[in-house]
Each structure stands twice: as C-alpha cells, then as structure tokens.
Length: 164
Image (cartoon, rainbow, N blue to C red; front, side, top):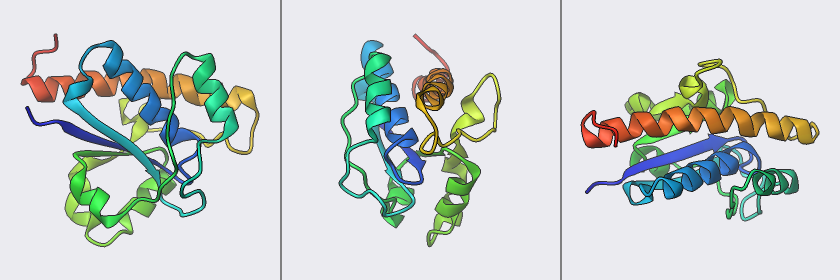
C-alpha cells in the first residue's frame, strides 16, 4: 500500500507545525492506521534548525496527552516534490512555500491547515510564540479538530471513499 506523505509547515518549526505533526501521529496511531502515513513538519525559516520544539509547545502537548519528538528543520525544494499534501499554518507560510523554485507546479498539494477546520475554515492558525499558555491551548484545539477532518479526508482518498 502506498503511504500518504503529509507535511506541516510554519515559520520556525518550534510551535505550530511540530504540534500538528505530533497530534496527527498520535491520532493515526490510536486509530491503528499509522502505517498509512508518513508525517513530518518543517519551517520556512532557518531560525531553529536542529532545535527541539518550544518549551510551551512541549508542555501543551504533554498536558493534552500527545507525545512530541521533533528537531526543527527548514522546508526544501525536495519537500515540495516529495510530499502528497503540504499544510501551511498561515497565509504567510503559504506564500513562503510558493516562493520556492517549482512550487507553482505543485499548487494542488499546498493548502492552508485550516481548510480542514470545521469551525473557521480557511483562517490562519495563530502563531502563539509571543503569547502565553492560553494561546498554545487555543492552537492545540484548532489543530486537534482540523486534523480530525484531515485524517477523515485522507482516509477517504486512500480507501476510495470507504472510511472504516
């Protein structure tokens, strides 16, 4: 079976995208479908290459029962070719992805994360970096519900419309 390759992208790869990656991995593992996916996250900037997620992101994930293991990395041209779906956390990240050479050839796979949000579809996932703990929990809740819809959509595509 061909695995769907999913990439979450934010600016620095220490808050939103590693949390999205961790939530996605946790949910598909709980559902017993983790073998269907290859999942990663990265940032459009080179600010935090090799760094662990922000401490507030780690605490928030732990508080919500989601294991998180990640080292920051920067988005590459190869990522745009390699991944089946690339989910930008906000419109600025989306525009930064499109600035990569040849990204315009892959527009069909580049989307905003909140395209899957049943509450506020198409909005930006706010960057909690300069805020407090409440902002990190708000981001968790946005990503949690959006990822539920994303997984359901991907399962439908993988199984030809039949979701177990």
